[in-house]
Length: 236
Image (cartoon, rainbow, N blue to C red):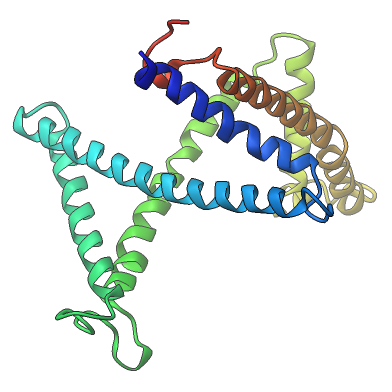
C-alpha cells in the first residue's frame, strides 16, 4: 500500500508544491534565495527527464497497439501498418542523420550543408500530410458553423450577424460587395476590427479565465491527493 499509494501521493505533493512556493519567493532573497533557485532548477531538469521517458512510453504504447491491430486484422490495420512504417523510417533517418560518432558517422549527413534525407522527408512527406490533415478541419468548422448560425433565438441571431460582418470585412469579396456604399471600404473593416478587439477579446478572456480556474482546481485536487485517477485507483 505504501509503495503503490502513499509514496506516489507524497512525491506528487512535494513536486507540485515546489513550483508554487518558488513562484512567490524571490531568488534574490539573502537567505532563502539560493535554496529557491536550487529547487526550481532541479524540478525543471527532472521535468524534462520525465517528459523524455513519457515520450518513450508513448511511442512504445503506440507500437504495441499498432502491432496488435495488425496481427488481429482489426478494421483500419493498413493505417496502423503505415504508421509503424513511417515511425521506423523517420526515426531511423533522424537518428542516423544526427550521429556524430561511431561507424554511422556522416552516413546520412548532407554534404556541403545540403539537405539531409531526414529533412527532405520532413519537408516533402510529413509537412504535406500535416497540411492535408489540418485542411480537413475546414469541413468540421463549416459543419459546426452551419449548426451554430441557425437563427433559433436572439443569441444565435446576434452570432450570425457578427459572423457575417467579420467574414465580409476580412475577405476581398466582402469589401468589394459593400464597396459601392458610401464609405463602405472604410466602415466595414472598422466594424470588423471593433468586433474582433472588443466583444471577441472579452469572450476570449472569459474563456481563458475559466480554463485557468479549471486547471488550477484540478492541479490542487491532484496535489492534495483528492484526484487519484492517474494512479489507477479512487481509494482514499
